[in-house]
Image 1: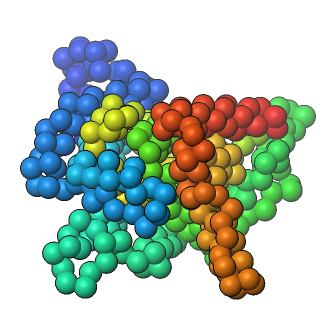
Image 2 (image 1 turned 180 degrees about the vertical axis):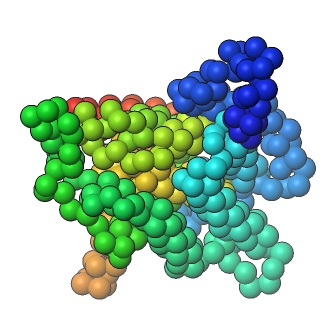
Image 3 (image 1 turned 180 degrees about the horizontal axis):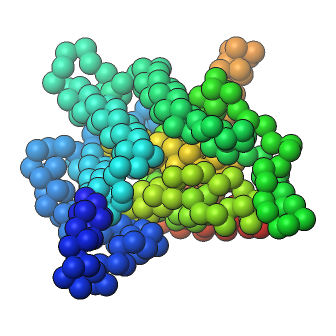
Length: 397
């Protein structure tokens, strides 16, 4: 809104000879930095009053768990305010609306994805919190299959709109390309002009929607599962979002051709969404670091995972997002392996066996004797290393 106001008044500012004071808003890098700083500040400033409001309304963690090994730890977290994801979502929305060009389709769709997944998470959180007052209700909120169905449906819808917005009259549409690791998206002719590489595979609508759906739903679930220790999901998300800032800045600029990665027109504004996500996550970490004053709940974790995947789908960097999100994949993978192995061994021997002491895997390390802060810090270090590795892979082309 602030950016659009500046553009609307630009001629008047020139007449008044004060346009130079506002020209910095034309710089995407400045607006991205401002969005990160603003979202961080908003979450920091409004954190305490929102936490106090959640506490007064008794919107707190139940401290219940099905895992016997985690019962003592879960009880220690009882009554800590949850649904703090509203802080993150609010910080992102305000920053993006003020500093991004909200006429940009990708920005509007990104905010819609953020809100839809936040709403889904909010419903799940609320069902968990109010289960005790509803006879016969489950404290687990939405059933896993119900939540997954909504995630897949929303993921497919947003992937469809991304595909349709990428339709152009050009014979080679980089918005639909399957971007494989180490594959050069462009070749340079003798005159130094870049052209799309002949070996690229352009995804049809169905394949694009399936990949986008799995990415958005999968990342949404992965961040949700990672959110089991103070600061783990918030810190890891902030690091990955910073990596996406770089990927989006490249994809939205003509430098993408020089680096041989897909140049997706009109995607540059997503730098602001990625930066705001990083800033809001860091701001939330202030309140969520050990010992946590608030939990983000599904309201925050589902929306954060979805927006990370959405940005990667738009700029055609799904593979690099998977590299950067190695910790998220490890977390969700440990749950899948644990459940699958338990069911398999129970069917074979009559007694289910576990690969880990408990899943997700961050709890496994905790039960091995790692202090919670140590698990979280080491997972942050791994995430930062993976982000650097992913960005290095761009140059490896």
